[in-house]
Length: 164
Image (cartoon, rainbow, N blue to C red; front, side, top):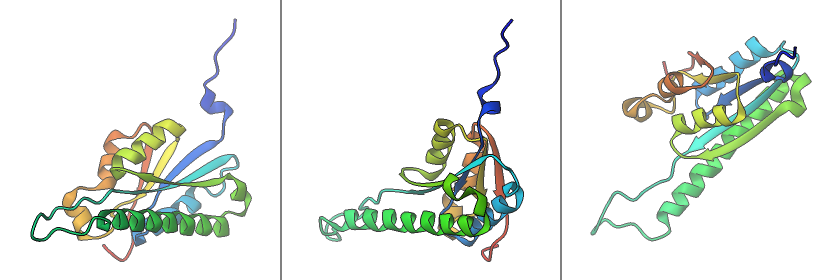
């Protein structure tokens, strides 16, 4: 009789870390290193999600045609910087996984993109900071709250940072 072995047992632990460049994200990365640094077989994927910009104003306050694209490009570049900084921090703290760290920049609604990437990548755990980039983000709804309620796996929400 053949017994099907769960494929999760045959692969490395997959840790998805979402960053928005905030102090909370930095603390989430540090906690990821502390908690999972000794796990031998692991893959870490760093993601950052940016949203498209839309012009809300109409005549006579119309913006020039390229404005929204410039904002989108700036947001994408900022997200690339966030992931590059996160990868650099992990490589400094986790020498053994240098080749097992990847980064990806996604476009969309952050909590939805994080959850979808976790499903697609078959993450074992998602690591996020408890707050994002300031007051407006908290007013519009917490990304970490959305991830906790819709994630296909365990979620580690890390508190800490100067924005408490």
